[in-house]
Length: 385
Image 1 (cartoon, rainbow, N blue to C red):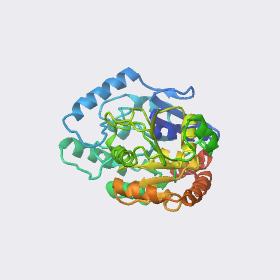
Image 2: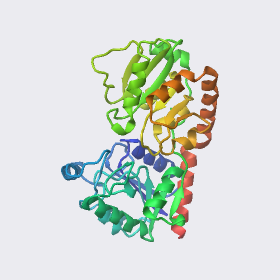
Image 3: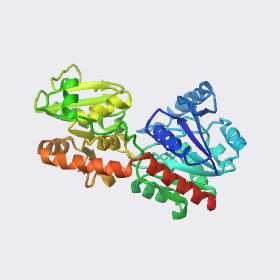
Image 4: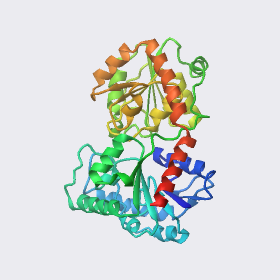
């Protein structure tokens, strides 16, 4: 069985990192597994195209999308990359496509691939025209219609299959692409590095970061805090409400600081997005992680926080409810006042119970061995079809 993974990067972004973790684990179980990427960082990744050339295609995409702007992030994948020829040269049995946008390969090139193809759906892009996420699938111009039709054509091919990581995405894929049940596979959850993301000593970390043990620490994290989809405005309103209340301490983690105008608060601190071990420390010193994403497949931050024993409060988005139903807290309305009320009313004993449940759940389901074993099973079933 010859398997090739294709992802834009092996490190940048949650979906790309996840795909690389699955690949690394499968390398120990299968004889022929390769990881192709454009933006290569890891030594065991194969770089299959010029980053300069792909960046040129990305610029062309952005120029075109200026005339078809939607609310959230968009991709086209319409330009020839010649990566299909490289893939065909290896003669794989299966090509597993993960986050392959940013012109990693074009849709028409995918149509002409000879092997069996598995799309791992980490967002909603394959069920729309250009959008990675949408609240209403607005197919209202020729570009959206054309690309959506190509994706439906791809989905109907007998050599094409899909992997989803929660039931929410499974239902969307079946509905939007009319996928038969034998062509879609559920692989619950994502792999988390348990050696890094684990419960650490809170008292020691509070002292290290100079944060009082008397404060309830509330955490928010997003790679890009300016991304409207991450709902950062709700967390900003929470900070505003509790400003300078020493019973609460707020932390944000991201590439940019949270925009609070010219205001400064004694009970707020921002950390630049950092290497995983420091992130694990920040999760561990916190009492509650708040996920305000408006639309999301299954945020890795939720899984990382749970692995560190930090309970999660989230809006009811994507696959979050599936894992937080008993292990965390769900806000069923997009409302900062509702989040504030939940935060104020959470008792310490509730946090202790949810922390234990989170760790137990993470240890049972978030191992890369468990997820990669499911992928191996899926690959074997696809090969046999």
